[in-house]
Amino acid sequence: MNYSSLLSLAATSALVLGACSGSSSSPTAESTQVTTATLDAVVAAYCDKLSTCFGDVFSRATFKDQATCRARLGIEFGSSMKGPGVAITEAQGQACLTAAKAAACSVIIDGGISACQFKGTLADGAACTSESQCQSGSCFVAEKASCGKCAQRAAAGADCSAQQCAAGLFCADSKKCVMRGAEGATCDANAAPCAFGVECFEGKCTKPLAKDAACKAGSGRSCDLAGGLYCKPTALPAADGTCVSYTLAQPGQQCGLSLDPVAYAVCVDDSQCIGAKGATPGECTAHLADGAACGSGAEPVACQFPAKCRDGKCAVLDPTLCK
Image 1 (tube, rainbow, N blue to C red):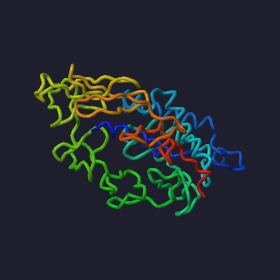
Image 2 (cartoon, rainbow, N blue to C red):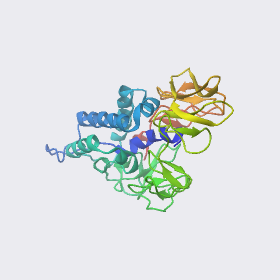
Image 3 (tube, helix red, strand yellow):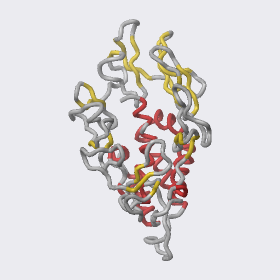
Image 4 (spheres, rainbow, N blue to C red):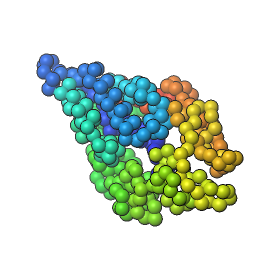
């Protein structure tokens, strides 16, 4: 597994939980609007689960710390709550909270928490920004678009360039909906990817190498990058080496591979490595704040999750603008 695919789980997190909002005149939990307290608890439970399932590297690289995770996912939820068509009750919110706390790590990334995948009242074709606005439970928003449209989810093997895949399926680089392969499954890096925790090696989903295992830098099975390891050559220029822990670098510090001495550093604390190429290290650069100018340069700096670069500025989706 490469580091960019690890970071892409950040975007997945918003889709796994959906959004929570709703209204009713009845005072029962089955029909009243989900409370802010329940929403906050769901966000906290999910941030805890991210840390438990994916480790310190993923958590720090994406959100810096638990407080930032809760704040940024809270923004995602808050934005979605303003959208038309959302109708989530307190009872549904509580069911989501219970399920989020108990969910297995494999469910978080490969299938999503079914109790947290809400459906709204908007018909197919209606403008939307979140899954829970739509009757289908699916809202497709293009990468740089500000609004999307409600639509049915795509089945296995169907095109996913403009549709969400059905539950349990993943939109592969081939833009086809596929199921991620478990350990031992036949795989292809582009068309038949592997599940989180295993990598495609010689056509089979295989566990990455553990700490202190023998490895070959640049070829062969990878060390467990998600687990904090890289292949450190024993003596240059030979590629033979050992899986050892890499360094966690903060904004302003050196990142990537360096040869004198041999070391590898991964950016954390909500930053990304800019300028690294081959054995030339780069520098960790903080993700851009909401409202900041973005999209320029040969290697653009990403916006802080959940914002994306839209019309030259980092912006969170606003459902009130979609008609």
